[in-house]
Length: 144
Image 1 (spheres, rainbow, N blue to C red):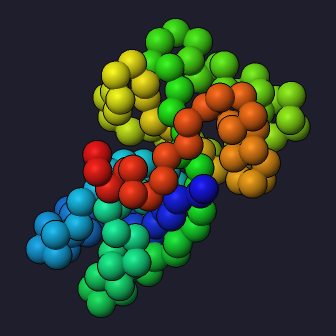
Image 2 (image 1 turned 90 degrees about the vertical axis):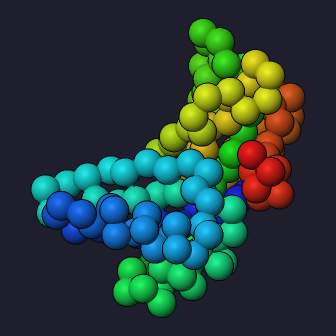
Image 3 (image 1 turned 180 degrees about the vertical axis):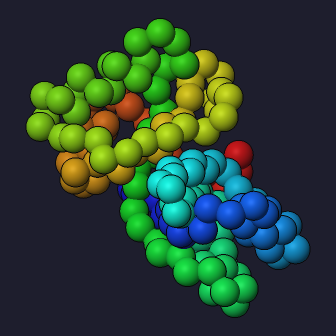
């Protein structure tokens, strides 16, 4: 039940992020969650959008290079220890987290949605299901 994430490299220069968000605005792309990791010369923009296939095409049409990959979106309690509860199960299963980021604010009542790229997304999904953590689908996320 993994979801699609888009990643694109952006040069570290003034206005570059604005260029990509302008393209999104002009094409009706709804950003659901994003993070930027940077180095001195470029940044990696990772994002969950309402329609990954459409957005990948829009990026390509506008001169941006994007890759699509799978990540897991999982609901955790939005309270102290909520994320740790999940990560303890990952630790027991021998999973490492390559990176993660979250949706802003509470998604459903007292739950938060965390996006995770694990060493094995399949194992991460299994561990989540076996331990009662709700996995989000792309349709779930599109409704947010």
